[in-house]
Structures are given as structure tokens and as C-alpha cells.
Length: 116
Image (cartoon, rainbow, N blue to C red; front, side, top):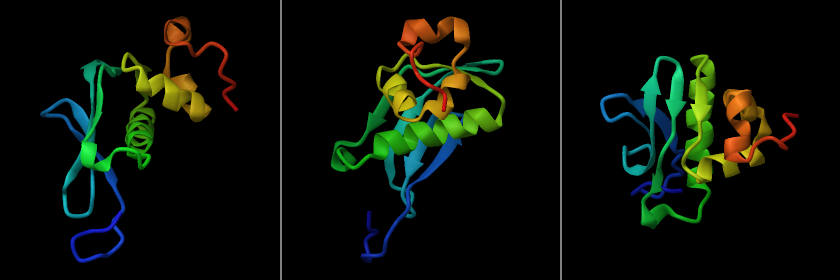
């Protein structure tokens, strides 16, 4: 991805707690997409992921979800991946399976994922 001057731009995932979402932005602050969450103590319910149509098809959804899951892991949190895209990313990146409580994994189709 390039900025307005043609320089390579690296997307960044940040938490926007006021809006209860993780956001993916470029170096200029342009919002590429977001992952909504509902937090209860240390549990994050993830109901919706949205990527701006201008940026679709470039892997930004997976970048956003992985960045959010990394941050939740650092916080010692758990995840309930209600958005259907999130379990797909977890299957592609099995290190995140441990964030989903074992008793909930079947509900999200994550029981057969090898945690690597």
C-alpha cells in the first residue's frame, strides 16, 4: 500500500476503546477497516469486521483480525469470535485458538484446529 506521495505505507492496528473497536489505519491515518468488540471483563465478543471497499481483496481483513487478536493475547483476554470471518482467520493462524475458551470452540467450528 502506498501513501499519497507514493511511499510504502504499513497498516497499523490500534484499539479505539471509545468506539469499542480495533481499527486498521495507514500511516496517514486513513481508516482501512475495523473490528467491533464488546468487552466484559477480559472477554472480547467480536461481532463484526468491516473493510472499506476501496481496500478489499488485499489481505487487510486478516491483518486487522491478527493484530486485534495479538493485542487481546497481550492483555490476557479471551475471544468469542461471532463474526464468521474471525474463525476463518484463526484456522489460518492456529496460534490464536487458545484465545477461544475450550468449551466454546465447537460453537465456532474450532475444535479440529491444530494449535501448532
